[in-house]
Length: 440
Image (cartoon, rainbow, N blue to C red; front, side):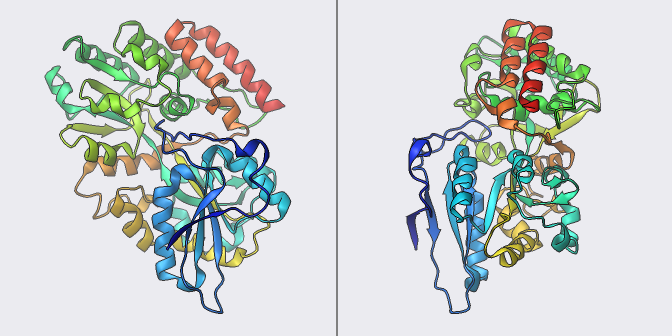
């Protein structure tokens, strides 16, 4: 039975009670959710049951629900109740629950928020109890890095995603390009975009959502840090942000495409609402997107002949990706921590990784399961899974303030550099603002 219930504690008053319209990594807007109401998956419990609660941000609900459902079916005595939290309210909601002494047993946390939560002491150190789990050595490296603070582990991958390059094979062939050879550098993206634009006024070589901060840190930043030694966001106050020649080079490549009209004008104002609609039209040559664009395109645009490649940097051989998604953690004051740890171990085993994740087209958390029977029929899915092994995520505090906020120095730099052409000025200003944010 599915019911709605209100979260514990007095969390439905004050500024947290405003309506929100969350946006996922790719910028699409799901149905408006009512703050602090949750989905309870009810099942009969016996006298020895140890029921658990888990909080998940609402824009990761689909996969998380499948995983929790499967656990409940196979572990009826240890039922987990799932609560959906608006993605932009996770931090204040958790702070309220912490003050009230009513934190969940499990917390699915946006990967980029983990450093802030670890530093604040909100999460349980699971280094020692997870040391004997052989699967922990096979999971996405970026997720382990982001869940580690002062060499102590505080979480495991739960719902991973990453960024890749989509390209329209049909347009490549029509433009005289090889449909089986995607661009290998950011400069080759520009060259291919020119040839596709030459097909006619209705065609464009490239697309990106110009006013979407999260979309662009997810897709443009990996092209920058694909060059070894590049730093986009600093790991602390003593580190310098935006270090490396590739940062200006990638911005210059985007600027060139914009100035030459290889990107449609409506991209400038796109806050992520039209991210996939543009590529689905069949008139866009290339676009960087999340891995889950592949099953979406297969469903919504079955006739679209497209390929998937790693995101390239300025130099041949430089490729990378952004490892996003959630890590699964246990709050430091959780009441059923031992049982919650059983769930962390279980979620990394073959059965859920293959039969819940891979079977539904989602990325397994383990890189050793990239080659599986469910992905074998579609090389594009294999490529998205392989991207996890080369993906990075900036280990930094105040990630949202530096990059995801609508007025962040990251998006201001991107827009100024690409649409106005002042690349040097944009980078210099962003460096200064990022330092101020990180050192306050």
